[in-house]
Image 1 (cartoon, rainbow, N blue to C red):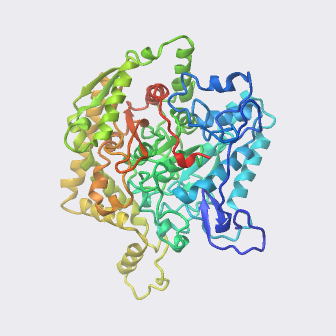
Image 2: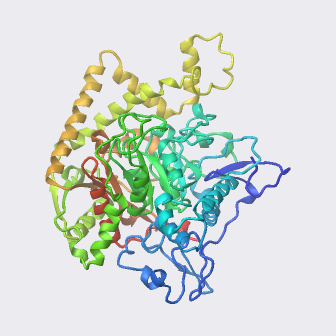
Image 3: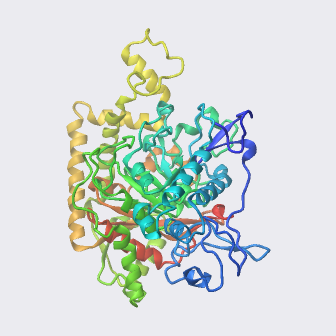
Length: 630
């Protein structure tokens, strides 16, 4: 496979995967995107929020800054020539909706959109490290060329369709998609961040990838994750602990686009960072105990974990099967609603996918986003958008016990005031079982992990340790021990050992079975709470993003950081993290995003998305990190 900008016959050299782009070191150059001269119309950049033309209808600059643009308006910077450059979605902020408008109005093509995202990705990737390094193969085509070829094929498919036909058949045409590395992609290495799966190339796509590609998405790369999804910082991936990174062309792990000294969260930190840095329009992650929502909070994007069974798990590399759930990450709630429309539904390949209740007939986007727009068009004032909506704030998450960072507490207080100003009835609610969810979760998760990861023995499945090609002199247990000890990282080994202990004779009854009793009690208590309230509200995480390597020194503190999110997975309920404020980065002049978590009743994603969308749209936050600016 040739590197980007590398002709046949050139030396391959050291290569990296920049969102799937394999490039030589000399090709890492910055590019300027989306420049516009005020008052005229130039070829529209795929990444620009507006084009400027006097009296150009809904794309007029003044009209783009509508009453709905506050929550997601992107910062613009005027350059010396008077031009304005904006990276991201439209004034309303949705990247997918903006791309659809560009195609509908003939202002760009799928190929043009893909190229601009890949160019921007190349500029940002050395600083953030969102994507997996490349693997060597004999192909003479770069990943970038493959992406552009896929985009050209999509252009051909939609060229004869009207905008209405295109919206029905390919609602995500040309939308650049990043996929977490524990989700299978046909013909592309899927390692789950582990050396034991370094050479694993799936023969087919996971159902979630297949559905999004069928709707028109262009996969632009695989994103880093903690090994097998086990972690909250995206620092335990094995992909950067290899010779591929010896020259330090990328960070030692994925970093937060708001401050590259900080973690992006995890285990879907690569996906969250890629969306935040505008390296892709939307991304897929997985959520076992908050692995979509916590990095969404740290990186200032929206992260949706649907009801367990609403989206197929087929094609996910299993960690804890009763907790794992694919999730959506995007710049806005609208992006996540559009993704859910494509992803929701029963899958015959996944026995745990739910056949009922069915998704809303009009779709989640129409039920959540269009309904709110209709209310505003009919003259509904902002103060009445959530009138009659009952929101319960879990009192245990707001307790003054030292767990909640004071900066997060301040953001929560402001968010509650904002919800009240929208007409919601906001009350504190006592959920006594809430704090018991964390130990029950970890006993359940490590027990299932111990079982799921038993297949990786290096004999029947997975790679073998170096120098162990001939293991005839070793016993079966010695060979397995050597392979697993050499090729699995510290965190998977730690959780396998804990899970084996909790399932061992004499302890299964005392630990695992009791954890399942607590799990049922947590679920029942949350169901009872949701009979009195439409939505349950908590902080997404007890702290903003913290410095890299801190959690590696104290794994227990990392586990405690999941206290706000794990109950949702135990109960199987839907939840969404939405940015709610920016706080000071201690000892730094930079700002950090903080998210809040809306929790709904099972299969009530439409209501959840509607409340989150109203909150987001009526909150004025500049949510594009400086690193994403041109």
